[in-house]
Image (cartoon, rainbow, N blue to C red; front, top):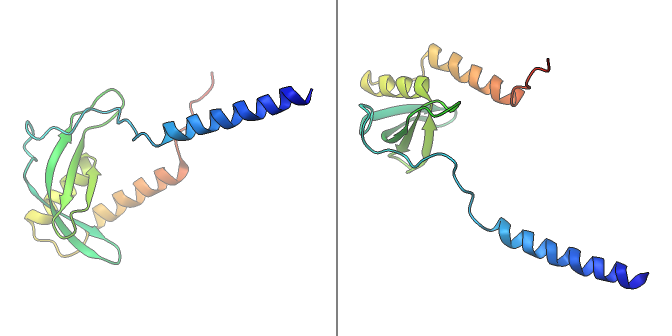
Length: 131
C-alpha cells in the first residue's frame, strides 16, 4: 500500500543521508606513509619539464619501496610553487639527471617515455585475459 511506499521513501532518504555523510571522510591511503630516509635519492635536487611552463626544480622528499604489484615511487616537492608529484623509477632518474646536467629542455628519451605513459593511461586498466 501507500504506507509502505512512504516508509520506503523515508528509508531511502535516511540511507542517502548516511552515505553522503560517509563520503565526506577523507580517502584512506592503502599504501604506507612516505619514507623520508633509507634511499640515496632523498634530499636530492630534481628538475621536471612541463609543456607551457618549462622547467620546475624541486627535491625528492620521500619514497615508497615496491610492494606487491605496486612499483617503487619517489615523492617530489617543487620549489617554485610547492606543488607535489609522485615519480616512478624512470621519471625520478630523468629528473635527477635533468638537474645534475643543468638541462634547459626535456630530452627525447623523456619525451618518448612520457608519451608511453600517457598512451597507457589513455587505454585504461589492462583487462585480465579469460582462460
